[in-house]
Every structure is written in C-alpha cells, then in structure tokens.
Image 1 (tube, helix red, strand yellow):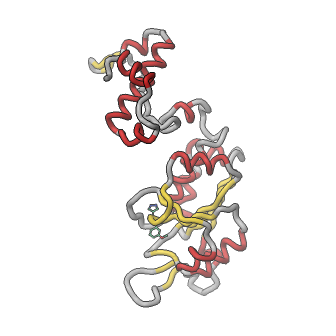
Image 2 (cartoon, rainbow, N blue to C red):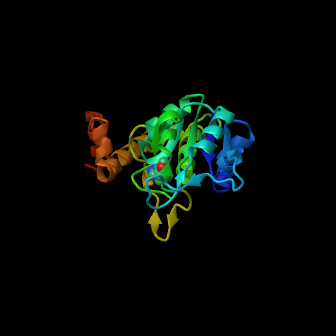
Length: 240
Ligand code: JCQ
C-alpha cells in the first residue's frame, strides 16, 4: 500500500508518521507513506505556496501552481483527496475500503483554503475527518493514514485485535481489564477470571451491546436494531 501526502508543513507530519507501529511498518516496507513538501515545487525566489485572494478578504489561499507541479511531477497513486471540512466524512467503512486498495494520496489544505482550480481539475474528491475546522489538513492527514494503515495486514502488532474491536461489527468495545485483580477495592468482574471462555465471550458481547445502546443508540439503529439473540444475551447478564 502506498500513500502520498502533499503538504507545506512536512516537518509537522513526518515525525508523527515515523513513530510507533506505523513508523515500524514504514521502516519494514510494509507500507510506503511518502510526504512531499509543496515548497520544493515553487519557482519564485521566496518559495511561496500561498497568495492573497482575488476579490479581497482576509487570509491567504494556497496557489495552484506549486500544487499542480508537485502532483504532476510525483504522479502519485489515485484517488487524490483534498482534506477539508467540506469533504465526505471518514468512517470505518471508508477506512476499510481504502485499506483494501493499492493506495491513494492526500493534499493538505491550509490558510483560508485552496485555489478552486485545484478542486476542479486536480483532486478526485474531498475528505473530512469531522465537522470542525483545523488550521490545516496535516492533523487530518495523520488521522486518515493511521485509520487506514492499521487495517493493512502486518502494520498492527496483533492481527486479531483490529477485527475484534470497536466498529469492526458496528458496536463499541467491551470493557478491558488487566492486573491487579483488585485495584483500590475495585475488583475485575468475576466472569473474566472464571476460565469459562464461552461465558466470557457472551459477557463481552452483552457488554458491547449494552454500552452501544447506552452511548451510541444511532449505531445500534444502523445495524438494524437488536436481534432476538442480542436480547437473550442482554437478559442472561441482567443488562436489559
Ligand atoms: C478536515 N475536517 C476538518 C482548513 C480549509 C481545503 O481547505 C481547507 C482545509 C482545512 C484543513 O482541514 C480541515 C478538516 N476534516 O480543517 C481550511
């Protein structure tokens, strides 16, 4: 999987992409994440990537020339997504479809925006990580790269855990515990220490269901509500 990121702040992005399991996966050649500095594709003496908006108004706009030059000289994997609050919202299913492909590219918006000709004639689509405004697309690029690459086989330490978790099946995670069995008078639920693996699996599933119903009823509705099995499971553990 190859992911190319175009930014005028590579020094903000490169360090966070080089740490932890993603950094190791890049180092090991499991994923190929390339960060490109838009400033390397400027032609003026000041290496400027932005300019004042036609028509006036506050702030600066990313100019088209360095962006077109950067993208055309690299010929990065498509689709090329512009990161911005106006885009299609990233969710787990979009992350999964991107992870199933060969690669894609990201363009980080900055300042007040990006020259509209980039949107019209260069990028394939616009991607958002949520309904809020960032100073620039770099933090959003990191979110997209992390959400997608952790689904690529060989990136995460534990291959099983990416599947078993939150959102994998549209439910929130069950509660997790580690040692000590009793911490400040708070004991780990007895079922987890019972050694009854069938019962543990049912308890976890019931906890996931109850927690999702309580905190994110919209997610339960999205999967079509509770099945009869789901209800039986909640009843078994007195969670109904
Ligand atoms: C991404 N949710 C918010 C900020 C303009 C494309 O133009 C702009 C891009 C940005 C940076 O991205 C975000 C964002 N997902 O703010 C302003």
